[in-house]
Each structure stands twice: as structure tokens, then as C-alpha cells.
Amino acid sequence: MILAALALGLLIGLALGALGGGGSILTVPALVYLLGLSAQEATTASLVIVGITAAAASVSHARSHDTRVGAAALLALVGVPASVLGSALNRTVDPNVLLLCFALVMLLAAVGMLARARAGARGRAGSGTATEAGAPARAPVARSRTGYPLRLGAAGLGIGFLTGFLGVGGGFVVVPVLVVLLRIPMPTAVGTSLLVISLNSAVSLAARAGHDSFAWDVIAPFTVAAIVGSLAGKRVADRLSASTLTVSFAALLVAVAAYVALRAGLALT
Image 1 (spheres, one colour):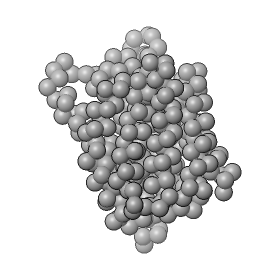
Image 2 (spheres, rainbow, N blue to C red):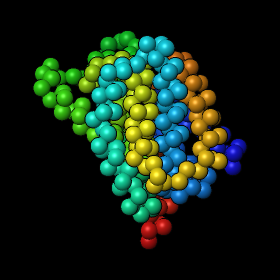
Image 3 (tube, rainbow, N blue to C red):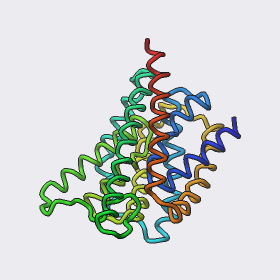
């Protein structure tokens, strides 16, 4: 059990550190199907693992001045009520329905990642120069910023709800929001996303305090390995093509989502 938790934590931390999001979405399926936790236990454990891992990884990015603290605080603050609501709903939903929702979110995350990778490829082809990891050469921001606060607020609410309800960090939403709406360079978006994830996870855990149980025998080794993996992930991101990483990880998400949907769907019939 401990060895499995260490191996899985290392893999997920690596993805989280390299991509700034997406890696955490594999935590719940791993905890449920490979380590034997219930869906509710897994979402709670995921908040601890993902929150601590993201916080540790964000420190590394902050030292490189790759974090916008103000933007992270705003997104996290807007998401507080949605995070509390999501945490409350988590306790009332059938575990298999919860896992089906999780599979859907994984598919959406994969689609979003592939779209980012494709946009980055088009940007490089059009400009003839390298772009930031997976981001278009020029972020498609409308000249008028009339709807900017509304879009940012909606993103914060959505991210907060996902964190509370499914125990995921929502980095696969945060990174595109930061790149497209705030025109933040990709490395800075990754660091800022990690800070948002850690703040949202803390809020969701506070909302669950006294209601949920914590499988510390799994959480502790998983978290330690994930932190190590996240620090290594930043080095991987600095050396390898982010588009390659993104496409590979998106394919993995699709495969895991199909497995989760099949298992949960059969359990409901």
C-alpha cells in the first residue's frame, strides 16, 4: 500500500509541477481504484494531497518570480462560496454518480489541454517563432475589457465548485484563464495556478472539517512523493516541449476517464 501510494504520488506530482494543473485530476481515481478508498474519502484525501503539493510547488515558482499573488488571491476569494457549496454537495451524492461526474470533468480537461496544444502549434506556425508552453503566440484577448470581471468571476466560481465537489485543483481551468484573460506568460500562469489550487484546497478542507474522515496512512506517503514529483516536474517543464507533455497527458486522461465511467456506470446498473 505504501509503495503504491509513493509511486502514484510521484507520478501525479510530476504532472502537477510540469503542467500547473491536470495532474491532480488523476488523484481521486488512483485513490479509489488502486488504493481502495471510497469516493468521498478519496475526494477529501485529494484536497490534502493536492493542496500541500501545489503549495510546495508554488514556492519554487515564486522564487523564480513566476507567480501573480494578486490574481491568485482574487480567483480564490471569488471561489470561496462555491467551494463551500461543492463540499456540502459532495456528502449527499451517490459515490458512483460522483465518479461519473469526475469522468466527465476529466474528458473536459483533456479537450481543453488538446485545444491549448493546438493553439500553441498554430501560433508557432503563424509567427515562425517559439511560443510559451502551449499558449498562442498572442493571447486572443478582446480589445474591450467590459466583460473581463464577469469572466474572471465566473472562472473563480467554477474552479471553487470543482475543488469542493470533486477534490480537484482546477488548474486545467486556471491556466487558460490566466493566459487568455490576463495575458500572463505560461510559466507565470503555471505558478499562479498552483497558488490558486492550494488556496482553494484549504477552503474546501475547512468546509469539510468535522464531517469527513482522513486516511492518513495513504495521504502521508502519497503527499510526500507528490511534493518530490512536483519539484521535479518544474525541471521537466523547463527542458521538454509543453505541447508534447500536454498531448501525452490529455491522452492519459481520456483513457482513465473511460475506465472510471465504465466502472461507475456498471455499478449503477
